[in-house]
Length: 348
Image 1 (tube, one colour):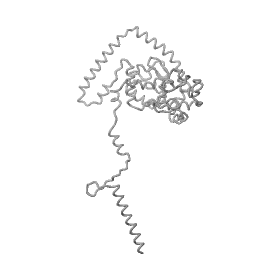
Image 2 (cartoon, helix red, strand yellow):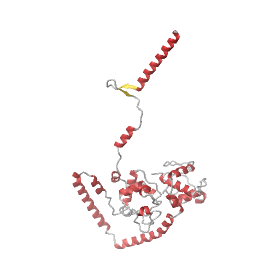
Image 3 (cartoon, rainbow, N blue to C red):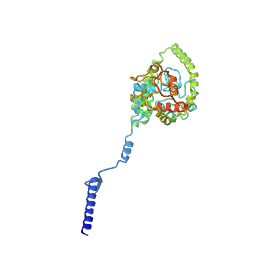
Image 4 (cartoon, one colour):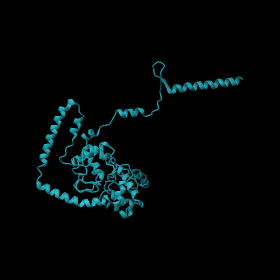
């Protein structure tokens, strides 16, 4: 009986000591009467969510006001595969002079019905930002296969570059800002608008110095080049590849990329057995500095357009006989289109 009572008391003592130690470890007095506060708080993410709502990032207009056209030119490499800045159309319409131009307004280019229905609007910085962020959502059903630019600052820089490629165009920043200003600042906005108007007048006068003969020659040359490219663009738009790209699925392409992962990486500058594929679409063929390309690849000119990438993925050995690529190729057209769609998102 003595041993039983002693064992019971001992167990009770251990229990009480354990309970006291646990209370000491996980709770501490808050110094406000008998209130206690947990010393170990489990992070549920609610505080971060509240902070995120309070600390909203800069708007597109704010980023565009300080945007870098030089940085935008680097981002332009992602557009070069389908668009030109010399007045000629490719897979997509030319983008020189695009800012301020009516949407779907390039004569002779075969626009999709989705974009043609927006022809009553013009390309302002705000419209271009929405288009670049998600072309498929901006005009559902259009032919654009590019997945979009998710980074707002990158879009602002690219729009700034396109403004530079649109002589005579002045972004309506002052007018847009004025609508958000308090009434007491209207006088300042009016003065700024007057200054902008004077600068625009000076630019217009300078532009009118170009002779009519020069304009006529340039217009004739542009129209001739556009006419030559339109037939090719129309044929390309109706090609099986373009039809497959219109249905391209980046998620399915990511799954297909497993076949490439053994030799290629998606991190910028991280080469493996093959060169890295970060920003590959629109990049010069055999254009990764420092990678030891085969003579067969090094001798190729041009950039990785969807058409070039499709031909390469279908049959690497046939595309560049003698290259080091041991991959047999992807025979299914839609799988190649999905993979190209996914690669277009790498480097955004």
